[in-house]
Image 1 (cartoon, rainbow, N blue to C red):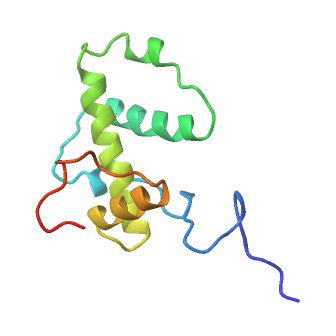
Image 2: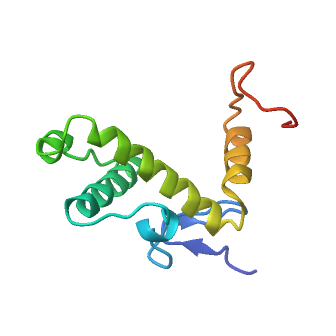
Length: 122
């Protein structure tokens, strides 16, 4: 009997992909239209790592970290981090970002509100 393949975080299941050290997220690679320098680079790194740590059950210390940010900065960097994570996941699964989003919404049984879909979409 062949043992079941296991990943770093437990048994692997078909169609399930997890981030790992083999292919770390690179903000410049998945956010090519954005350029981050100096403090901006630190902010996008924090936003991406905060989303990953929250998924792992660790609460990031937002108050201490965001105290020196401008008031509206966090929301922009959170959105950029979400885009980077979605693109990284889609890339890892060899899908386009829209195809990945459709699979994700089907998995979680999420349907867009009426009137939000474009013509020609299923």
